[in-house]
Image (cartoon, rainbow, N blue to C red):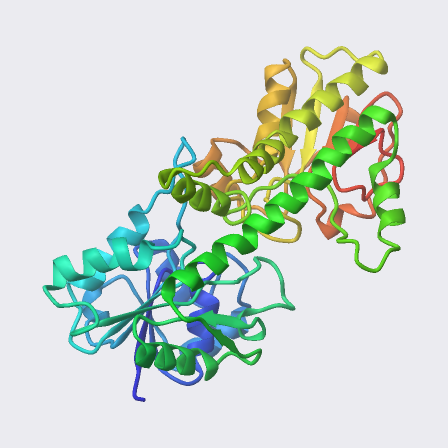
Length: 415
């Protein structure tokens, strides 16, 4: 097929996908962020999902980066990769998805296919997005235009499991469209595809991927709370248990980011709307959301034991991104530690060589520091396990070291 593909949303998901498609198809990458578009035109990806060479390769392949809807009006495949966040009440915020659908609706033509990759609860594509497409375009779903759903599986910062190397789940609004969507992705995905019987099945498959991981991590976090109370080293327990072949080896920690800490709320929202109370999933969310507060409390107790005055003590937090070796600061739970330590009266400095100072300032109103000496602090919290922190030499004499990821040997406390 002679497809002209538009990727809407050029973030961690959309850009690698656009790069992969550009090797075989005419591709236009669309984003409403003018700074982002300009940077990509100049060959720079601030998410670091693509190298400069890969961005330039995409440009050489003919990809066009744009924020002008006139540039995408001739496309016949629209792939939506915009964020699906939650609001302050942990309810799904479908605004980016709705606005993207409205933008496409103004351009939609007969026989066009709109494919959604954003994580949603089952039913959103056909009940929410299609309604916007029909309303704006005045075209009829499954008669004039069609839809597909193929959930993103990008793991930010992972250079091994990249978009073409992860098996892709696909679906379509009719059996014929399902075949077309599957064939489209199969043409670029080396790992292959799995075609679902319906869009709702594909939507549900994605939302449970991260829900399962969230629940499993919550179990390990709760075990850490129990073992710490008992005076047992949690990591030693996990290492021992992991000697059994079918033990799922996970480690305790903060659960943030745009996926694991968000996606379960999409499923619980729909479940509660239908009258079912998902106690296990919500309980897991409560445990994981409380880990930042727990780390701060443990640090304070260790400081008191060492005779360190809490008020006006200086605390250094190393790492702010939601995971190691990645610049993504979205929904990072390190912020909870920072806020808790400040509530105790501590003066908190934050450093992270992976994070963008401008993004941190815009998103959280915080300033990152680059230059520091460990001796000037009464507590150091290693919050993220970046590779650059693994060989640090820090004396814990006269100070407390709390190491969330257990990368230092002389930490006073760990999860």
